[in-house]
Amino acid sequence: MDLATASIKISKVSKSKIDTLDFNDIPFGKSFTDHMFVAEYKNGTWSDMRIEPFANFSVHPANIAWHYGQALFEGMKATKHQDGSPMLFRPELHSRRLNASAERLAMPAFPEEQFLEAVTELVKLESAWIPPNEGSALYLRPYMVAMDEFIGVRISSTYKFVIFCCPVGPYYNKPLKLKADDNYIRAAIGGTGEAKAAGNYAGSLYPTKLANEEGFDQIMWLDAKENQYIQEVGTMNIFFVIGDTVVTPSTDGAILKGITRNSVIHILKDKNYKVEERQLSIHEVIAAADSGELLEIFGTGTAALVANVKGIGYKDKLIELDLEKYKVSPFLKDTLNGLRSGRIADTYGWNVKLS
Image (tube, rainbow, N blue to C red):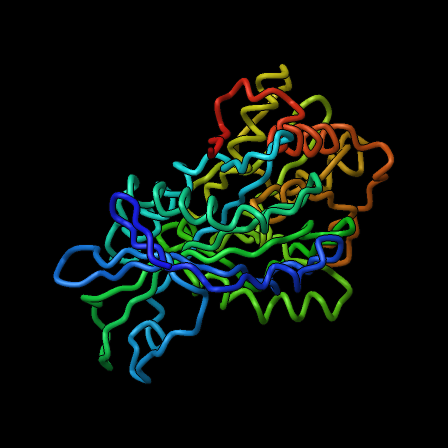
């Protein structure tokens, strides 16, 4: 069946595969819904915007993105309000961050109005796939890849923009142990660290593998110049509760401007917590731990939401904290989950409720 909105052609599957999903057991990123949004960029404009059955693409072996890495992605979530309505959380910020990433990678912007229309129509169509349990969600993966068929380092002239959906449970099911790595780096000022470039994640895999072999879950990256200032974790921004202050590294061009990070800072300030965005060295964190002033460590991200960190290893030093004493991160996780389910009134105007 073919339908249409203002600019999107919609072709529905004849039969949904939703009956194959166990909503009580949803591994992250392994289940996919029935449909996806696709748009093509040719001759300087986006066109052929459509929602169609989820399926493989045919790609030329000389696809320029495969060889030179001109690819980016976003991550966002749809949840279900207590009254059953699907909701998006701050979708306009995801559109703007996607376009900021596109600018850094010399890719075309995808118009915000069309982005919001695409996300809205896709989520409405796939609303039955949104898990009902608070803390679970329908994860949306918008991404853009170069499509020129050419071997040579240059800016592509054609692109594909896609959004697909995954029903997901919590990304992390246990507190994390991090390694502060002073050998490998994730990003440097002037590089692509602030963009959600696919290559950023490829470059992190080997150091993370080594950290995993040492018993750590993720790497906490340090700066490229002095190898001491904390940047972020592989899948999230990072926060420290030191005394009466919540401290997080400032976004200096090498750190992703997390939307959950932004939301958490807003909530904390609204509740009269003292928040500092500034340079923070691993040595300051160790000193705070030694003096007893370091009370909590947690990460934030679209996938992770709010994830507790139980320890950080740095050289021969291991910081360990008592998770039973954490107060800030449980409050933030409960608040974000409550906002996304309608259990807590959205006084910030962040949710977009779809009818």
